[in-house]
Image (cartoon, rainbow, N blue to C red; front, side, top):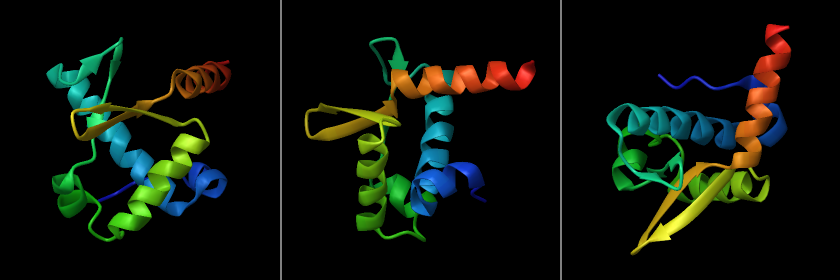
Length: 106
């Protein structure tokens, strides 16, 4: 089952919200397994296995468009290693999340 934030979807788009939710899950798994850690952040690879197993109800071009849109809106950051792109949340977006969490806890 895919869960996503409807407020995020309204702001960035439905596919973006679904892709973002999947990336958050994969980042958490990498953190738990201490994998793909670089420059104080965890990174994920949106390889074909991710498309087939988790995002198979969205076309690959739509996923790629969603990723580009999230990068354009400074939600995602990417880096290329060999022929693979890895993705993570931008530091700017992480700070925004922290601020929102703090405001909710007041």
